[in-house]
Amino acid sequence: MKAAVLEAPGRMVVKEVPTPEVDDYSALLRVEAASICGSDVRILHHGNPRVQPPAIIGHEAAGVVVRVGRHVTRVKEGDRVAIGADVPCGQCRWCRNGLGNNCAINYAIGYQIPGAFAEYMLLPRLVLEEGPVTPISDRLSYEEAALAEPLACAINGMELARVGLGKTVCIIGLGPIGCMMIDLARVMGATKVIAAQRSQTRMEIARFYQADVYIDTSREDLVARCREETNGEGPDVVITACGSVEAHEQAIEMVAHRGYVNLFGGLKKDARPMCVLSNTIHYKECFVTGSHGSVPRHHELAVRLLEKGLVRVAPLITHRFPLSRIEEGFAAMEGRSAMKVIIQPHTD
Image 1 (cartoon, helix red, strand yellow):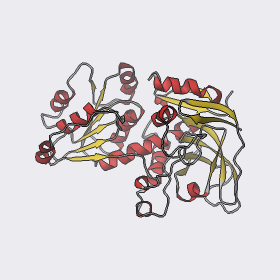
Image 2: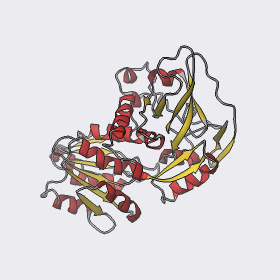
Image 3: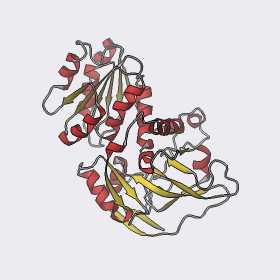
Image 4: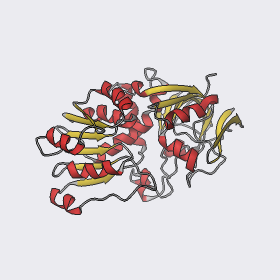
């Protein structure tokens, strides 16, 4: 089969590799769509301790099961499934209690487990027993199903931020996940959604999602505008769906008393430390949370929301490339001309 093999940081080569062999407890997935994530871009250029080249990365995927081992019961040949990233070990206290994304081992597809930038990928026993492998209906395209993985991460973050009925939610950063969060906030009961973004290109795409307020942070004072839109009190929930330390600081500055901040977007390793007056948190009695990844129940919920059209991801898919042109897909992501790039391994 053909696969995009990460041979070293900065070097990915599309070449022929052996098709994975299925044993009694595994299954083989024909990958129909795989989306490039920002973390894939970072792995390509800077590596990752959990990725040992030569490796096949890619963790946002969907496809059809074409072969199963004789003891496999979770899937059968012909099943259409979406695949998530984080795979619980199933043994530690975190995994046993449904918090596998906090596992010390932190298994993930496209990291320790060979990923989706290939024509076929193996679903090994651990993935089938513990991981995010979710059936999808015929009404959901493979491309949309591949985006269940980032949506699952968004669900995790918004759960931790206690988004609920009647809340005002501010989302800073309108990349793919920020846009998904506009729909997701509505699903979870928010009555006012404030969306903030610096890039004009992304702002135009984000307007499809019809947030109540859009703030251009290149021209407007984000904190002042958010207070203006909330009668001076600040949003009940602020989510930083961007990798900006300034956004993290602004979120805590403007969140309402007893409100929640979710620091969703991770920062670069060389980012300066965040500067926050702890008294701000103290007197507001606000809650500052972080989130990363998801657990299998989040992935299953994400698929169901996509199937019902409650969260819309088709407008976010701006580029498609065959596997042979995956480098162009990565370039589109890095140049920020793309929102979501889909790799189609079986398209010429």
